[in-house]
Length: 134
Image 1 (cartoon, one colour):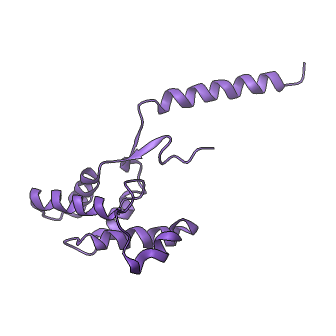
Image 2 (cartoon, helix red, strand yellow):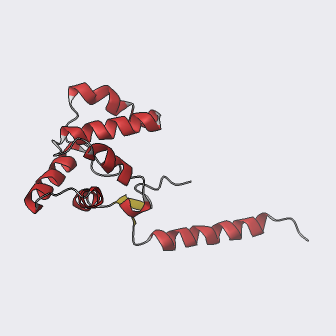
Image 3 (cartoon, one colour):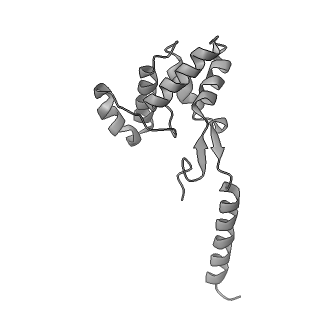
């Protein structure tokens, strides 16, 4: 069993993540604003599967510690961190989180396919070795 975030897939770059959400929301943002906002999001650790926060604000410490206990807490922690990044529109925090739930937000590592094929081959070999004789 694999946790896909890390071993098999990586989150898209922060700027790509933000750009996709901005485009889908039809929000107008200058390039320099987008770059600065992406840097703040990255520093805040607001992207699930991305870099961890450089600093978790005191008011979010408990929420951050318990983020993996439920889907609701996970969402609450990451959207709160996104809001700490001084987004130009508060609704972007939820839209950014929603983006991470889509396949487009995750990129396979170059060796993911070959690794999974190798493991599948080993699984088939092991099951044949354990099969009772005909």
